[in-house]
Amino acid sequence: MASSLKSADCSECGNPGSAYKCPTCAAKYCSVACWQKHKDTCIANDLGSASNANQRSLVLKRQYVAAFPTEDTISVSRLMEIKDDPRVQELIKSPKLRALIAELDETPCPRMTFAKIMKDPEFRAFSNAILQSVALHEDYDLFH
Image (cartoon, rainbow, N blue to C red; front, side, top):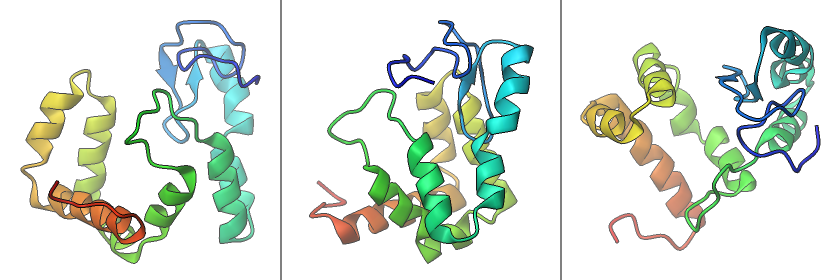
């Protein structure tokens, strides 16, 4: 699809106002027909067939586009480093943590949900691991 699509446009047909998103790659789609079309080309298919970590990283980089980039937006290369961080990989194995992240991703009120789940020790450990990974590679003060 063309790179001029807005973040709410359907990734398959380009129609505005897509109400659905793929649970695997977060691509937006507007209908069952577009979902069926998307399933055949979803990043999950590429990831499953990618033969090594470098190929998988390239597939993920192709799919990543910041919807609302700011000065705090993390670069794709930094996201790949965070993804490969052993602490993050170990923590993300927790079903409880994965459920909390899914809850945050699906909520209509992310600020309230984030405030709630930040009280969970597993989520705090995960957040700290990500912040520490970013801080190791950038001149970033965790407590500024």
